[in-house]
Each structure stands twice: as C-alpha cells, then as structure tokens.
Image 1 (tube, rainbow, N blue to C red):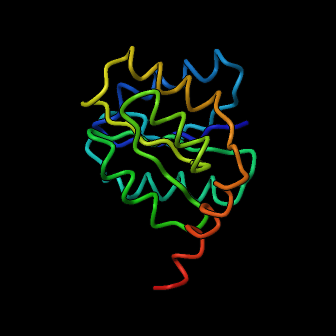
Image 2 (tube, one colour; image 1 turned 180 degrees about the vertical axis):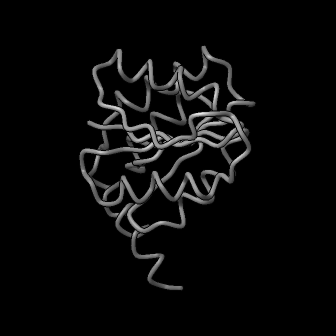
Amino acid sequence: MTYVIGTDHAGFKLKEFTISFLQKKGFEVIDLAPQTNQRVDYPDYAKKVCEAVGEEVNRRGILICGSGIGMSIAANRFKHIRAALCVDAYMAKMARAHNDANVLCMGERISGLGEVESILEAFVSSEFEGERHLVRVEKLGNLGQIL
C-alpha cells in the first residue's frame, strides 16, 4: 500500500509525524505537500492527492489542514474518492470498515499527536468489510451521477 500525503500550511507540522509513522509501518509514502509552511490553498493539495489516488486500489491518501474540514469537503468532490474526516480512532476504523474510505482527513489544530497516532493506526490496520456495506458504497458512487 502506498499513501499519498497532502497538507496546507496549517497541517505542515503534522505531515512529518504522519510520514514517519507510515514509513515505520513499512508503507511507501508519496509526499505531495508543500516543503515549507508558507501559506497555500488547501483545495490545490486536495486535488493533487485525489488525482494521485483516483481509482488506484493500492493507494490511499491522507490530507491534513487546520481542522480537516476544508480538505474533506474538497476531496469528496472527486470521483472515486471517499474521504473521511476523523478525530478519533473509532471514526478511522469505521471509515475503512464500513465506508471503504480511501482518503483520511485530519486537523492539526484538532488532534494531538497521541490521538493522531491512534487514528493512523486504526485507518491503516482496518479493512473494508464489504457485504452489506458494499451496496451502500456503490450507491455513494452513483450519487455523483444524479447532479
């Protein structure tokens, strides 16, 4: 599994912690985030990550901004992306298990490092349960066609 990371300036500090966590777990990481903490626009980095994840089965994304809200709104505008804003480990586990989330969104100003570590652990270790949840995820995919 490869994780694609994107942040804005408000998620810059948490980026290094997240990359270190993922690499220690043996995951490949693609860093599409800014390399400095200068102000940038979060939609630009959500776009980069979501385009890199797309329909790739072996890729997931992680987006970090101040609250995680902007990144999650931006990410969910992309086809084949199921982004989940998670503030605790239970949300991250359910995002994967029931919703087959392929992008995790977090807020650097919301969660401390201990909580972030729990969120990351739950997200990377949980698998999609399929079965009844598969039908629901397929319905989510069809909603964009309604617009």
